[in-house]
Image: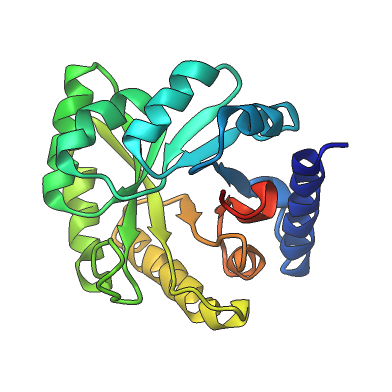
Length: 227
């Protein structure tokens, strides 16, 4: 068995155990294999081993990979920051965008999706840590943005995403996951359905699952250290 296949199996087992600990159905949790900087041969290996959703950070890098690998049996998600001037390409390339974080970007995505005759699935990225190095809308403005996005015809708002600060101890990330879940609940009380919570990475995805993640973004635990 190849290392990637073995790693994928191990990650799926960890997802299952984390879900079982809190009485959740493991099948509710989507594993996004983060393929940033991973070469196409190793991505193909992951797909052969059962990876179905691939997460990319950059539009240009993803474009080359999608052209080479294709889309059959896979979804491609944009999990990195998106500039408005790349919205046209993002709408064409990706099945879901996790990093919607402004009214300006929402309107541009809506316009570009309409021009391509499609509706694009999006998550609102929330910067709960308020770190200047991280993208995302503030917790205080998230409800307002959710209402704005909901009014757009060519965006389907599917949920929220966050990226807590990096901690060696995953327990330190738990408050951020709790905060995102509570924000989702607050927005849902306003009548906006948000089925997806994209949170948790290689170091802390089990804690994220315990706190309600429906999507976990795992790179290093599948592909090893970035080259």
